[in-house]
Structures are given as C-alpha cells and as structure tokens.
Amino acid sequence: MAKIILITHQKGGVGKSTLAFNLAINFSQASKVAIVDLDPQGSLAQLESIVTDIDIYSNVINEKSIRDLEADFIFIDTPPYLTNHLSWLVSLADLVIIPTKAGILDLMAIQATVSIMNDNNALDKCIIVLNMIKPNTTLTLDILVELEKLQHIKIAKNHISDLVVYTRSIINQGVGENKKATIQINMLSEEILKLLL
Image 1: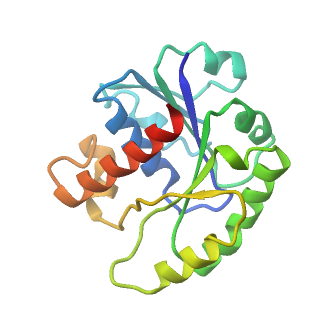
Image 2 (image 1 turned 60 degrees about the vertical axis):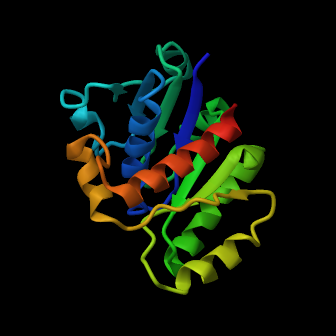
C-alpha cells in the first residue's frame, strides 16, 4: 500500500509545491511515485507532459481515488489556504509535512495549520520543515527556538536553503549536479523515509 505524504501550510509562498516536487523526484529514483496537485493554481499539474518519472494527477479529490493510485509514495500538494478537504486528507496521510520559511509572519501563520493538526489528532504524524532558508542569518535560529515551543510536533533536523537551483528544479526535473542542493534534499528524504518506514 502506498505511503501518502501530505504537504500543507495555510500560508502561501512557503515553497510547498517546489518541496513536494523535489522530494517526489528524489524518491522516484528508487520507487514509483505520484503527485496529486490539489492546488487550484495547478503548478505541478502543468508539468504532467514534461515529467517522465512521476505520475501527476490534478482531478483526484476523494480518498478512494487517491488510494487507488498505483505508487509506492504519493505526495499531495495543497492550496495556500485551509480547505474543506484538509481534515480527510490529514486522516488519509501517513505523514504531514508543514514547510515554512524562517520568518515572523510564517511563524505566526503556522499556528492555524498546527491547530488543525491538533483538532484531527495528527500532531504525532507531522513534521515542520524549514524551507527556503536564507544563509548567514540568526533569524533561522530564532524561529527554530520558537518552533520548539510547539508541543508534540517534530521539527526536521534537515533544512532546505533558498537556492536558485530549487526554483529551476521544476523545469530541470530536479536539482541536477548541484552538490549543496543534492545533499540537502537527500538528507531530508532520508529523514522523511525513517518516519514513514
């Protein structure tokens, strides 16, 4: 049975789609992977004819349809706002990834997402991933300290930097030969796999 990874945050601009794509590309090197794009913007759905190693779906909006997809791992990308579907998606997921930037507004916005996870008794299957991290700033450490105050929710040890190669990864079908980006996405993938298996 497929492992289902939900990527959600009620705030836009935290890199949900790009993170979902890069994790899916990384996982597809050894497994059959699908992406379900539930974001009405359809950023990932537009890649359906370009990407060869991943099946991408945009019209899958119920539990049975998602469970019927033939894949080892299914990544679900959600819209940048809270939807009526979020509760059943949380219950369906084996893991919920909550990407966030290291910013004050992002920290404030994450509270609503964490609250929904708590309401659905799902905090134990959530992990917050610091994404699009700026180099050489103490703000990241400050945000990590504040995130640690959220009880009963994991914070990923591995972070994703704000590298241009991640932005380009959508058209390049991954981070290619960029050593720093490859190490980061590999380390985060390993951390996620340990939570799933």
